[in-house]
Length: 305
Image (cartoon, rainbow, N blue to C red; front, side, top):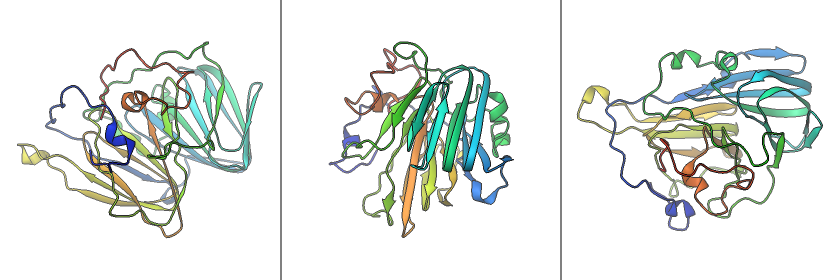
């Protein structure tokens, strides 16, 4: 990993032993919703879907009121109100402004009102939602090197609707705003103005989990490089994929990657991980709602990279 010495990610715990480089690799997924017709369209709401190995992103643009219902939902899922102009009701819980809502398993109805963007994060245990993904066919066969889905321990006090403010002060360096539940970790980074300083990139890799980068505003170039192995037939070309909002990019392990904001205006990217990251969770004070969601006693398959 290559981080500036002032960036606390340079102090992240490392795996006890370096993971051996695999021989085969899966490619990245780039789904640009602006180039696609919505998978679902209703009165005042349009929705697109993209997926990774263990998760699905539902991205909706709303002007009015929309209802998102689940029956027999097998696990927790997340609703992100990405704009201050939105409000939501789930049972007797209400939220307004930029908020992360964690919805428990079972039957639920989330009603969202206003104008803005709503992001839902579900695991692929919700097969009906996974089938709607624009890139669903890419996962007809399991992608390489990704740990099996294994939810984290139940929340303190049991499952219930929980809400978290996405406008609280982030960490200083890196400027992360991290929340987790049993199924996801969300890093709701603030928007930035102008292009990223090209002398301050942060190439890094993950041994056995995907990173989902959702571009909400502006444009980014995702720089991705795969290892070379003894079998040249398995080599992959470097990618320098330019994407514009709204889009989802799924970055596979163990590729080396970094994302570069390039728009002269506002650039806004958030990151999602399914399940939560052990390395971020091990850092004291990094996960803002850690008291609600205990971490496992020890990492299972997911590595700390």
